[in-house]
Length: 258
Image 1 (cartoon, rainbow, N blue to C red):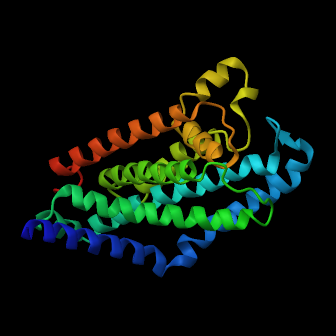
Image 2 (cartoon, helix red, strand yellow; image 1 turned 90 degrees about the vertical axis):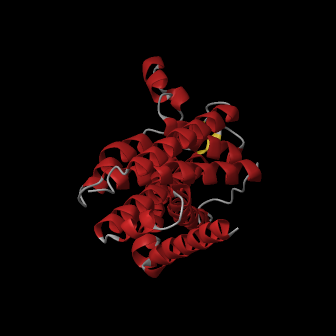
Image 3 (cartoon, rainbow, N blue to C red; image 1 turned 45 degrees about the vertical axis):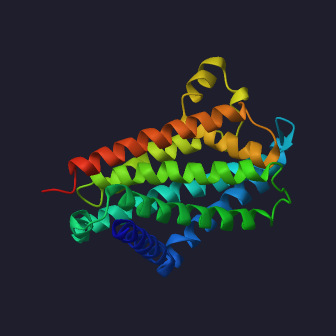
């Protein structure tokens, strides 16, 4: 009973710390992604969209909104956890957590919930901004929320793994810049993969972000390039895989024991 109480207190403390961390500097953590989303909506939706007009029978502005929301969720979930865990290593308080009577799964859960909170906060703000350009509302609200939350968990776990391996500040910017950004932009935010030549369509379907964005698009618009079950299957697979890797690394002391 005492052990469970320790776990609960530790989890709640970690979650509060993580949320206060990004809320304390909201001008740096919440405002920039909203401004970026506003620019995408203005340039791609407002200017380019007037020439394209429709994508797969859907007004182009409506088509890109789900992808832009998910882009904010993905990058901020990832960035929050990778920077927070790296900061814990550099400030040495991760060692206090690891030697405390708290399980590693509680530590992981605390960091992940913090990343999810920031990802969802950004996603909600971007969704509110998008209402200035279009009046869409979720066709399948439950699927919309589930895909957003599960995707946020996925990239929070990926950010944790990045934070575990990072040895200097530059290490937490390499993956977002050279891996995460290309996967996101090539994930069908601004176009339907059905328009690609067969070879490139096949290659695009190897991109997990494609399934997450299309799953979210299905939740909002009721349309997707692939069945919704495939989106959930891919997201679930990556959650279990990344969660296993993160726990394995922490249990072995990788990146945390000198």
